[in-house]
Image 1 (spheres, rainbow, N blue to C red):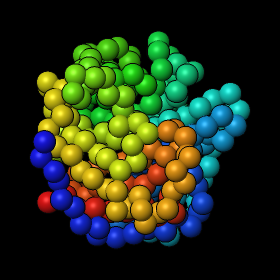
Image 2: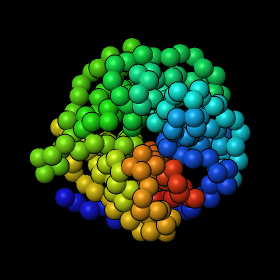
Image 3: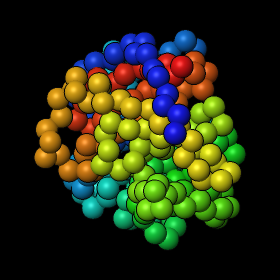
Image 4: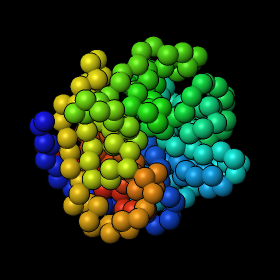
Amino acid sequence: MKKIPFKVLSEIKNSSSVKIGGLVLDESNNITTCYTVSGGYKTSAINETKIPSMELIKKIQFPDTVFLTDLTLLNDKLYVLTMNEEKCYVYSKDLKSSNTISFSGKGWGLTNNGEHLIMGDLRNNIVFRCPQSFEIIKTLSITTNNKPLVLGSLTFGKGLIWANPLGTPSKIICIDPDRGDITQELNVSSLVDKERIPNDSSIFYSSLAIFYDQIKEQIAVTSNQWEHIYMLSSQ
């Protein structure tokens, strides 16, 4: 498998102390907004912050019974996924609620390819869905060494699905969106070492949050327990 070298372009201090389970960067009028979700029961929230200060602009706290996992921005709408609640919440970019979509099953990673939503199901499946109806378009089953690979955070860039295997904070893989083959791997163990994450962290909180900025061709990498967001260029 091809190894992807990378360079750290910048480090953004998470001065807001927001726990980041998933993130999206959106640039408008030369202002970069960072939308994030904080996960966990009793702690799930959607947060709007500004880059690079990470000043918290707005926060929507969810009920104690909701576990948010990831979010994505498609056609100026934020789609926010839940783990067990079988719901996807839809918001405008000013964080006004517009819709709630119900579906069957579990959810974890969420991204899009400009047309369809792409989500993980806490198994080894990547599911393509219609953003309006949440109807399933197709499903890819991801394996490595003939074993199922459960995926965490997802993002889309360079025509590939970038994914963090759940509970593996040092690895990002690239997946062919047509065949489901793992084609490349990016090892970020140097960032994990820098953040000094406890070894006993649960898989949900030690996993990465990733976002591919297709305009700048940069990858944002962070984690629930990290103090920084790292902006990377892949070679």
